[in-house]
Image (tube, rainbow, N blue to C red; front, side, top):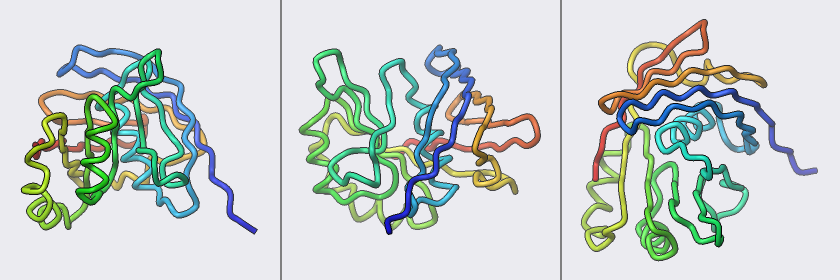
Length: 177
């Protein structure tokens, strides 16, 4: 019998001073059985960094042909494709051909090795941005995960502050490209 996704609800208040974006979002996140709590929170942070009324979570890990998030226009064309992790160059280049803008949000200790290997292969991708999320301090992102979350996210000068009223974390969003 296949395992089912865990459903989490999040009320996310975003104050993005870098983009001048201030909004509340009621989000439903389906956590794939193979997805850990940290990755779930990283998807939520990727949403916060690129929040828009049309930005939506996709099937993600359940469908290898979809990104983790995307923003489509009213015709169904993909405006923004957001992948999380360290995708290979074929996936990134294919996404660049399918959408107006591609963003790879990467994390973890292996990022410098991955980026050094893949960066030269992505030179021709003009609509690509790559960001690395680095959690500062002792509070792990997994500590924020609950079935129902109420989160405040403030973004300024490439830094993200995430709080749920009990704990807070600082995450640096480092632009690699």
